[in-house]
Length: 349
Ligand code: SAM
Ligand code: SF4
Image 1 (cartoon, rainbow, N blue to C red):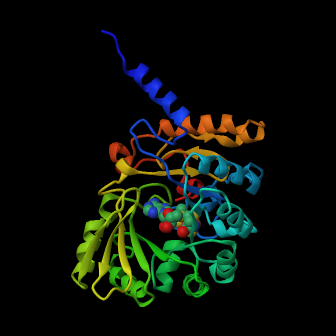
Image 2: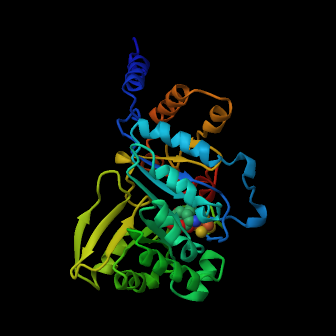
Image 3: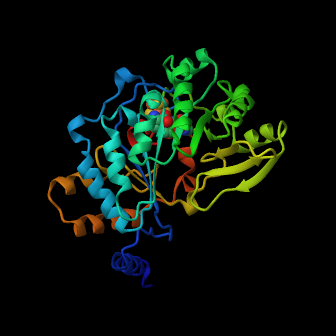
């Protein structure tokens, strides 16, 4: 029997190369890019960072410089990328990040540049980031109790992070959101306090399901607090209005009856959202990942430093995106606790 599959696959890829679209073999179109600007971090969150004494950091001379990042973004924007999230490691450890933000916001086709940060440097940086064109900021906050914050994030930084959140709001960055990794036995008794904290500031809080990625190896199925459990818990305290999940977004949202704040749950473990994923990732050392769970580390740095043309970069990127894996929804072994080739702090969450 003749097998037509490879033929159809190849001709589909050729069509996409002609159309100049970032579409994968399952028809998902990439619109958003997460850029990790460093793998370094001054925190050591137990779900993210392994024992720092054992970490093999990416050598700094392997980091893409800002001109290289901007070039990749120009190429990606010409292929349909519209939104960028800067992340890390801790992105605000990278010096003069404002200049990168200014360049990226000026690129044709880029509608929005946002950032995810641990908040340590936010109080002193919020205004300059806003002036540089940053739109919104998501601050990770896993506890409102000082001791517990230190236990989870490995640093006594709660007061400083809280100042950072307020400075971000005062500077006009918008939206300001909070990310909380929800873990049974660590912070599950604080869900309502954290929700109330966000509502007092009229900002959105998103609880992320604890993923068995890296960190200190504390993950186990019984520590997973699911999005449904969180929504049920919050629903017992407030009247919630379901807002659903927008196509391509990671968070399923609810509004509150009085209109203050917003609840979101991000459910990569219990209800993965891979089927309409529109994100790709660029690591600090120039690897393009079409999925958080991609084990192919497509090396853009090599092409950039070998003076490839934009056309060569485009073709390579389109081929990488075309081969995007189906996602965690179709990789049950990941959800059972899988060690990735590279840790979260080095990919960019
Ligand atoms: N350092 C910044 C921060 O903490 O916000 C940005 C990088 S961090 C890797 C990005 C996001 O991934 C954070 O909100 C963090 O809480 C989340 N994250 C890290 N490890 C995770 C895990 N194992 N499960 C769920 N979320 C995780
Ligand atoms: Fe650092 Fe963010 Fe990872 Fe925490 S989650 S260790 S702040 S990169």
